[in-house]
Length: 164
Image (cartoon, rainbow, N blue to C red; front, side, top):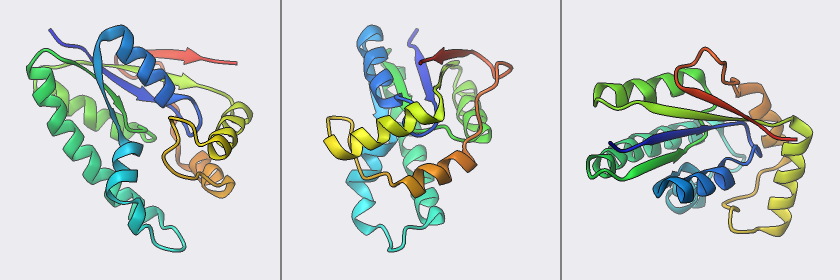
């Protein structure tokens, strides 16, 4: 049976790095929402940026990733989902989607303090390393602080990963 992993965490928590390491360990394919956003939509980002605009496109990306992931899982290929999972309702919706297809997801929640996350984001913006997809301003980072819903231990199949 194939394995399915959900990676959740706020901006700068290290989701993409963690997803890549987990994929290596589990011989899994990673779906990265930021990568899809960059390649499909970021060139059309309105000025000033709009949360509603981004949310609509993120939802489209999620739909396509879920459908594509089922094809891999059907072929017994493990899957790691690195698509943010900022809202509890999104995590539940995705877990229920897979449950309806006879699959259980394991959530890995990266619980990292705000200061550490901002340092990571600032470094990523400056260095534009392999995990860089687009600029995250301090304003965007702070906005994400207001919309992120931390994962609670009562969420099904959850592993809390802490980092200093």
